[in-house]
Length: 336
Image 1 (cartoon, rainbow, N blue to C red):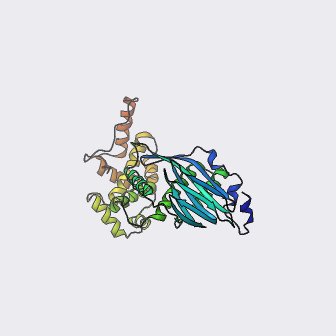
Image 2 (cartoon, helix red, strand yellow; image 1 turned 60 degrees about the vertical axis):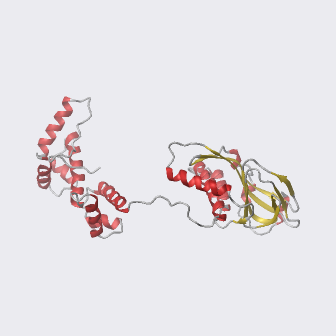
Image 3 (cartoon, rainbow, N blue to C red; image 1 turned 45 degrees about the horizontal axis):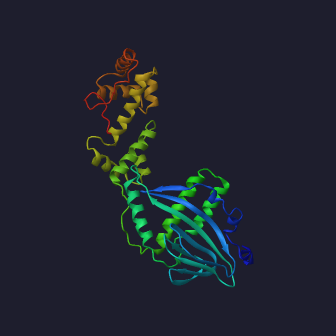
């Protein structure tokens, strides 16, 4: 361990020597697709100049990263030089030998994982497919070192600092760093060919849903088509076309009116506010305009609707209110 003190340049991972087993004190398990990943070792260690670790193997996966120093590794029967910024993987049954350079120490970040199949019926199918693809590539990685070209090493320090500070969500943070190290290791060897595409959105449906959610959150103000379009980086014409594509019978103005009427009906069923106050609260310019729209859409005045619905609630106090949105001509149509 003393060999590491011979270095003079600042070493960003130095703090990890202070509590060398900090991450290993945690019981860290990650479910990924149809696999369970259990952390066995997760630390920074130092090889003094000339130190040798003779041939050995594991039944599990060990990820090795060299953040500083130099040395040599023999994987199977093939020797390779190691230097700062390199990584290598020893999978189940891979015999390997390690030694530090005779003149300088070599630091190593080590993540030792047990990865076993575990059926997960509720897993997202895309996650399952991606995990399976990555595990196939992990098991096919060539037995030779590579450059840490995707930056897996900083994940060790992020995990350590999260654990030491106990910052909010630190256990989840550490688990995410484990997956990141695994992925970045595979990416360092990968040819870049895309084996599967991530799920993509139906942008028309997505923008429509986003627009409606925004309208539901802001309907009480003088909301305009242009205001919602701006939130989606669209023109008003483009957004109106999206509403038309989803349902030609329900343009922006009709959807906004439906949202407001649903809120009005809810207040009428459950409260005693005046019609004037309800109109003000729910985005109608005047009580007279609310009367006009309500009678046209519901086939009755707001007052009549209130008496009818509150009478139903009084007669059947133990039952849930009868839904007031149907697809009849006298109810507010609601697009599910």
